[in-house]
Length: 459
Image (cartoon, rainbow, N blue to C red; front, side, top):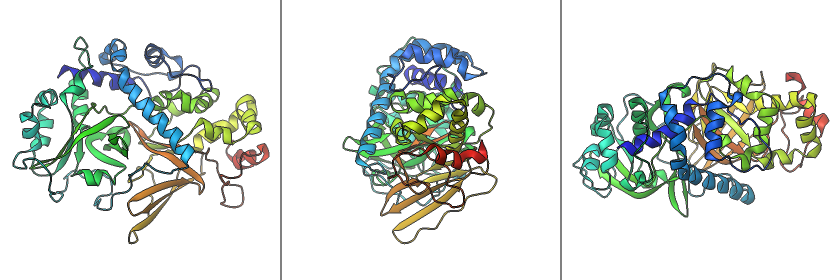
């Protein structure tokens, strides 16, 4: 019981010690990942963060951080490899994943939790999810935690709706120390609810899903459900890059149970996630530092966001002259800040298979056509009237995302507390003046005059 509480402390520290985008005090290209102590110090004491409020749960984070660093290592290694592999292969989505052909919802949270039809699975469907995990000798620690939270018990016992529980096996708790400070009961309950998917997601449906909604409603997403990221590879099904499904399709009266080998922690802020991967995003982190972007973003009130995150390779594509101008001249840094604003869509959280639209003017998407579907979005950005276009193409359950016609999303759906990260292979830029065309990804670099022409109206 106490062990899940401990891992909750890690996420709580990461979440509460950051406001929107957070960058380290220094960020240099190709730097190694920060050490555990450095990360905690940067989060809790860093001047770049701006004002923040921490409760007593943060105090336990520093002593606990080293014990759970292995989980961060899983995330870092898998995510970094995914970026490298997908950029190298020119692939636009995860192997084996795509939009669900039988997904009958729009990704939004319906408070009445509509029923879903039953599917044949292994297991005894005469028991509820709660009853099954309470009886199992492999899920005793998670079940004990659930028993301390009546609301979670009610959810997992309810037959008014169907759910999918991703239950950590007892072994998932082994590396968590006993001598930690217990986080708040509210946070533990949030962590428990994050393991509960809304609706039935048998293995065959997960294979064709990119994300799925959970029972954890997130205020910073406009009250919508926080989501889990699903991916399929040679190693099997993974959730949020690091937690692997080790047993699937255990039937219950009110849904399905899948066993996982790592505890699922509600995701931290967008900026906190980016700082975990300086080897992939050090140029972007340096851009945040050079433009004092953290101070700016702290003043923006957001209900969710889509952050298009360029890799180091994406900045390299701009060419040496453009990068020298952007990073090493006073005038260029104003244009760099405009680019950073353009790469964030406020109040519009666009996943591959869900869209949380909190904008003033609601977006419209195309309807499915037979077995293929193309959805087009013109998302607002933080750069005034400059919009960013997104096209999601679906063919027979597979999906790919393009930004402004040419830029590809190479690692989709990095779930975050306050939005979603879409990793892109080029730095998205506004179109040329006078026409809607965007640069071709085959052009290879950009002239400074062209860069200024695209951005001067907003600088």
